[in-house]
Image 1 (tube, rainbow, N blue to C red):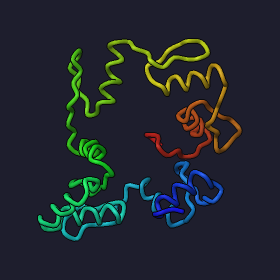
Image 2 (tube, helix red, strand yellow):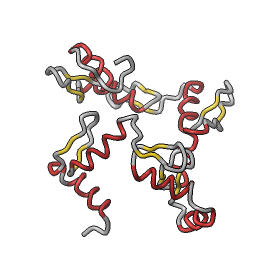
Image 3 (tube, rainbow, N blue to C red):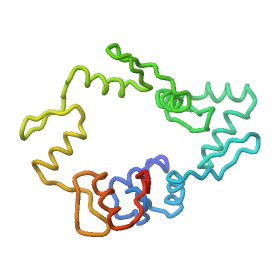
Length: 207
């Protein structure tokens, strides 16, 4: 039994993938209903069809518009009550995006403010996120925490290790061209190859 629709959807997505006949043509997401697919496809578009009637803001989804209306245009006492009711209600005052936690909300706000609170003590370069700061520090320390189990070669980033293992040791090529039998180690290689077929490939600049 499931106590909410979201729980049921997660169960179906994980345990019954065959019951998801509607697949997005721009990514690998699948859905049980066409209406869910259409809603998802809005995330791939720059269109913002849901306009606020009280200010110039516009949104990709009706949910985000609703969050904007409740948080930005409600009286002050209503906003305070919503804030007290649950810390999980985090609505961006810039775009109306609803975050599930305070931490996620703070990370999202940085995309609007551009604040760079993490500074490298060696070269003074600044970063918006802690993970990007830590990734940068590996350049100075030359740490390579991701080691290959086959040849002991080490890498700074996990995805570089994965690419190495697929290309050198296992010959795994999970990215299949849509137009011919060729397959590739990385998605980027597959996308560049597909351009040779004369078809536009989404996600690449200049296409």
